[in-house]
Length: 116
Length: 116
DNA sequence: GGAGATCGTTTCGGAGCCGAACTATTGCGC
DNA sequence: GCGCAATAGTTCGGCTCCGAAACGATCTCC
Image 1 (cartoon, chains in turn orange, green, purple, red):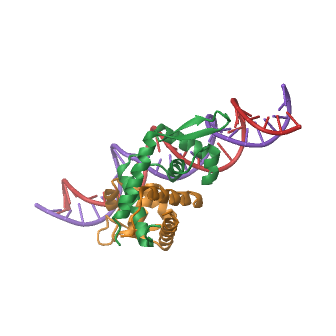
Image 2 (tube, protein in one colour):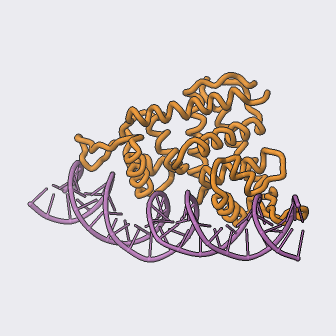
Image 3 (tube, protein in one colour):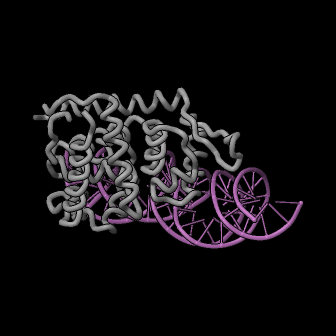
């Protein structure tokens, strides 16, 4: 475990990163979209619409719309499951991987700047 | 400075906290609203509409609307500046302080759970 | 006290997201 | 094959948010 984080530091970290996201991006993702994006990139596949909806505790249309929006942005892609054609599998994209990586860098940088 | 944070850990932290926010709250704040809320609670007063807009790089109506929404939620309050009645000062509320504190606890808890 | 600057709010048309209900397609068990 | 379950997508009215522009109130400076 990395060193402990005090509540005050935790809040400043959250503030600073949110601040960067607001300042740097034109149109920003909703929390739900962010949760979907990070789940796809951090947890092991496969990812289905139903599975994501259940995991996040939201309805299916929420996931469908999130995939629409983020697909349009090139952050991830959809593909029908050939072994069970009812399913849609969510895949990562190069552009999405870069965006997630940038977010990680922001969090690391803001964490490094925290006062002791 | 607390111990270093690797990019992979940083992303998991962000994912886990976002996940909690999505699961636990009915209606969630936008990133902009979150940035306004945390700025008011973490940075020293006074906070004006103009100042917040400049700091976050957004237009004034964005701040006005954020204050409308979060004021309705009881997370902060507005008061006219008596020394310059053009200004509106943004104040903290008890309910807002509790909400911010809860967020801090979530971040700390999720940080503590990170794999080394 | 009057002109102009400053500040927050409101208005406007447009866009995105919401949940509930419904549809269409596919797989499964009989 | 046929019904039934499961899956993703779509439609609906309603709500929030968006940026640009206009507005009203207030202050400052002469």
